[in-house]
Amino acid sequence: MRKAGIVLLSFLLAFYTFNSEEIYKKDIRNRLVIQGIGIDIENNGEYLVTIQAIDTSNQATASYDSASQPPIKTYEVKGDTIYTAIKSVTEIEGKIPLYSQNRIIILGKSVTEENMADVIDFFVRDVENSSSVYIAAAENTAGEILNTKNGEKYITAESIETEISAYEYDAQIFNIQLYDLINRYNSGTKDFAMPLLSIKEKESEKSVEISGTALFNSTKYREKISKEETLFLNILYNKVNNTALAYDYNDDKKVSLNIVNSKTARKLTLKNGVPYFKIYVEMQADISEISGGVSTKTEVDDIEKITLAGERYIENETKKLLHSLYREYNSDSVGLARLIYICEQDFYKKNEKNLDSVLQNSIYEVEVNLKIRRMGHEFIT
Picture 1: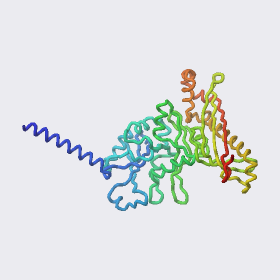
Picture 2: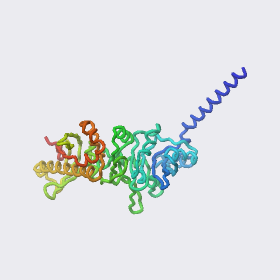
Picture 3: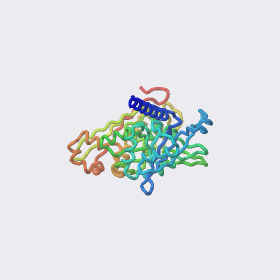
């Protein structure tokens, strides 16, 4: 009887201990609600992890107005691994990190210029990390991005996330989420691209901006392309909708289009043992503005010139970017090696070890079919 009582007492003690731990974890005041994680590597090889989190202390929440920015606090922690570094924040705050609310992962220059595989492994392996979180590169350090203040207020990870998510309306912005990167790894592709962040200062005001797109080869940073070039990268990715495009036509006249939708297809053939890539772009657009004043007659007369000039412009700029990617930057960030694997497996297996050279010497052509949907209030029939 006494033994049974001891067993029961032990069970109840274990139950209440476990239950109290679960209650502790569920109380938001006991969790470090992470909004942004920045990764840098110190000279001694240690990881320097910058964490931007919502400040849930009583003092911070008491003065919080729901109409204003949530109270933010940053932490800098170090460790031999990313996991040990982040876990050490518990020793500082006495709170358990909550990753599920993370908005962005930022990789500093010291990370992107090395092999990123170990860094990505933590975010892929830890089950609490959201697979839809955005990933970005910093022109310098990730720490300075997450520690940037405009006056007394932090530039929040949420605001950076909002800026990146504007890619839906602005194809000059590139985006990649964690699951995109996982899928590329799983398909054997280690070349990719991600938005590049920098700090902009104007008249004593600071902001974090997307300054371009970073290209990678075998998980190492290769080159930066401008936001203007990023539009044509997104065309190759088949990710262009509701964005602006401006170009010259008819000597000194300029036209601005709103690209309503765009579809890109790729075709591969082998010609004398050399891959021949043909990129087909079907695009619908509205005319938003024409230089030279309002004239319906001029718009109707010039519609063919505007269309042909737009097709040539998109073809030339996309082809120029392809040549830069494969012949200068050595980055298969659009995944054409994968297309070879799918369409020409025997050729792929034979040339698997020198694919960089194969892609460098491949032939690239672009064909654009631009349809002007409307030129003002009236649809073109």
